Image (cartoon, rainbow over all chains, first blue to last red):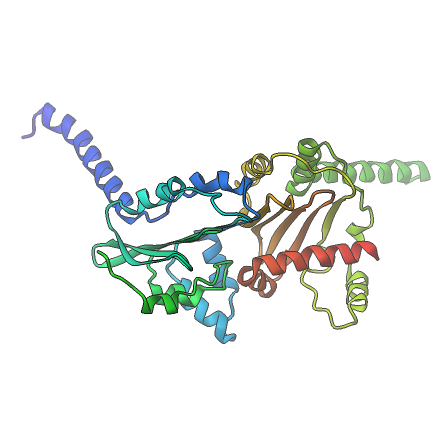
Length: 192
Length: 182
């Protein structure tokens, strides 16, 4: 027979374990980056574009994109399962409008558990391009692209199961800029 | 029923109708956004009294203006438009954006927001589901002018907006303005 202590403590203990487990599960799956640290750059940028396609909008896209249109059918396939697409681009009229510290606010998040850098191309002429994948065990939980040159900064964050091939198909859709990822892939340096 | 009774009844119906409209307007995000712009920038919009009557006739007119081949984006009769002309829109747009997002994020999804510090231009596109249709709110603010447009879109045209938010958002504003000019 259980003692009073056992029964009274067991419930809170189980609750605590469940809360802790769900917190771990949430952090493991959450590939949404906090991009608001870059918002101050809008005051200096000649053009800032902020695209927010959350889970609700993805559901709407799946509803309104036609199966009859080959392009829309392809996009539907790609976005099925994705939980969000977030893009921020900044264009500047002069050099040096953003700092390494601005980039670092994003990179710090990408050094968190599960994130792996797949692509890291740096060129004085063409700027830099970094692609990161978030792995939740065997499955991909999200993707991030950090592109920059002296007068431009681009961050793309896709939450949910996605890979580079899917990202290439999404270029030019939903406000995602042309990242020119296919040529970049040939220059890929896998640094992890 | 006497003539007097008919008159009282008609007046009562009119009062109820007007009261219902006022309640609807109060809860309307379109009007809230217009007021927010007026308060934030200290500007006044130009009234567009005939837009509520926009219907198939206007749709035909818009098509005619565009040479008869224009493909309408907004559903006929769904356009709400507020125009601000020749006034100053100086102010911290990052602060305005925060205020706007704070006010609309509960019921609308912010699809795309475009800002230009050098040109002083801001474009905000929000959308929400409305039964089997979709409401789209496009707010465009330039240095001296601004427009707020709300339209209903069919699923097909919403797909266009989602594929090319900037281009389609611009087309929605242009279309509403053409109808207004008529």
